[in-house]
Image (cartoon, rainbow, N blue to C red; front, side, top):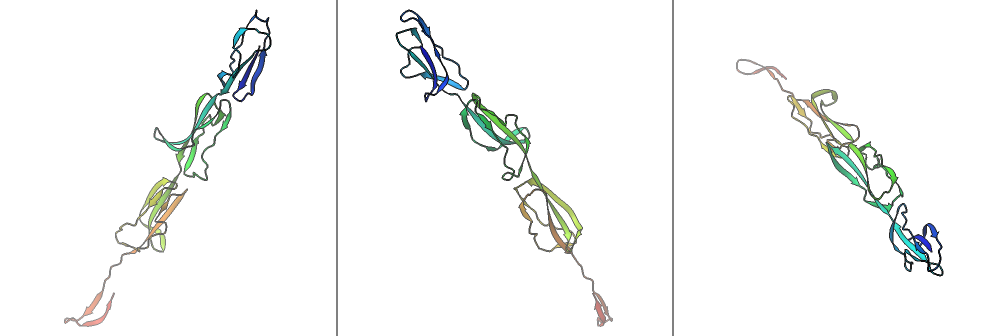
Length: 232
């Protein structure tokens, strides 16, 4: 009696187990073996019985196994307080249990708005029976916009408190002029008055000129006739 251990395509997984005994007298018994990363599926077509009595000739007992499959999920998240917020799920992958896998964080050139803070301990490993979840954790990369209100041609003369905002890289920002006592906005909107946050600080300048009043001195006689040119 020869016990064979093969996959669904007939490839040998374990060495054959061969036993002998007296025909029509001795009984035989074969074993369904445990094979790492393989699951017993069925007896092969035409297989002899797993146990019985030796007969004249050779009995072939064939155990057929199929791959034990595992799945892998790779997730990229950021923490909003204590809650995970999904950035990207790569989609479930499937391979035979024991097959090696390697995962990677998000590409910084494609996702510059995210900074990796936690690389999972199972970033690489082997498929197991069941599902393996690999989770990379990120934080937002923030940019800053400082809006300044200054005198035209003299940006060192700041005439109102700066307005500072922050936002994640790639998100939109907008700024605006403001009403400032005794100063008049030039009406020229800065080219970067709106846009998207970038890595670092963006400075937006709104320019103003002094709001001027006029005094005219008149010199006249008692009848209102001008005696001297006005002084303005």
